[in-house]
Image 1 (tube, rainbow, N blue to C red):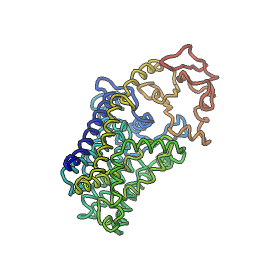
Image 2: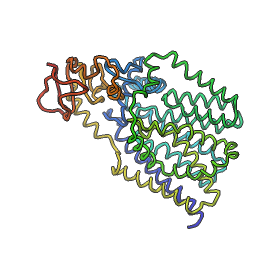
Image 3: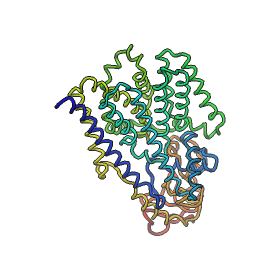
Image 4: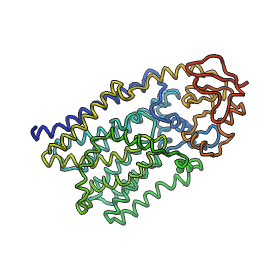
Length: 491
């Protein structure tokens, strides 16, 4: 095999993987988005909770106390809810659409965040490797596309979720540092800091970029830059905390009520690893570079990538949180991809050595095959369209039930499913907090059941005669089932 062939092979295989990922994204998007009518589907865990937060933000108050009935929560940060509320509300009003179109409009905002992530990743790859030759440059641009639309992103590309927006803001912060830090130091730090604050403002767990910037400046002995960065973050973070409601401030510590498990960590490690093989291999190939401290410290792109990887290390133990998924690792994989892009440039400069070049091509080929299988419904999920028929049938079952109505499926509580409130879209951590013995008004849903507070209940046909410590003694079941639901009425 000639050197030229070895140089082309990783790029060709990467191109096949990216094409497969694009097809899978299109297949998934058409299953969740329709212009003919709003589809009744869910594309990510606890999406109903995010939708309810957006709807509350449209009414002016996104944040609520999860320990008071109806036990809702708003776990993400303020920019996500209020920006989505403003944009979706504006589009909905301009087009005269009903509230049932909110998720559909939000899915296009998710696709916009994918486009921004793709753009920022591509710019970062170019800025980090200005001396890259044609083959390495093409490969790294495909790598940027893989980060944005590949299987790691998956369903989050069309979900109502702040993760990709926070990732895009963080990536933009890196682009600013790579483009300006050596030429216009203070403006670069200020703008990068503002983008870091923006990432946090979408999702409060995104403190990683601020840590990466601080570590980078510390290793460069840029004391003035550290002070400027600290001032930017104080001015960007403290006003929302001081001016926000007590319910808003409480979300900053909401993670303390979570459960953690090794099985969850192991599941996430396996899933992320299988979806990022070319990134992990490429990053491993840069290890010799990282051992040359003097050269590393002077190499702004490489040092920024290393600082990013170090700053995101807390993501690994955090992934043990029950309910955590691959989205926790988006930013960490981006920084590893910056290292991988540098490794490809070195392979090109070395004449595409046989073993690492073939290994890189092999990982891309494996990813292309795996994604193609998912496109055909093998080894993964390529559609949520079946949910639409399911929920339409269940909507007919509950639409005319007396209120207040409780359903174990939170989707049935959304306003286009059931017209009346209060809406018991239980906080994601509700059952964890209950297990920890936390106080809930009325002793939670179980207490309300025992009081006979609900006028009607829609429960899965498989549920027994007790739930959350309460029983259905005060209710009478309607004979038969309706679309997999058993219906109860207050006696």
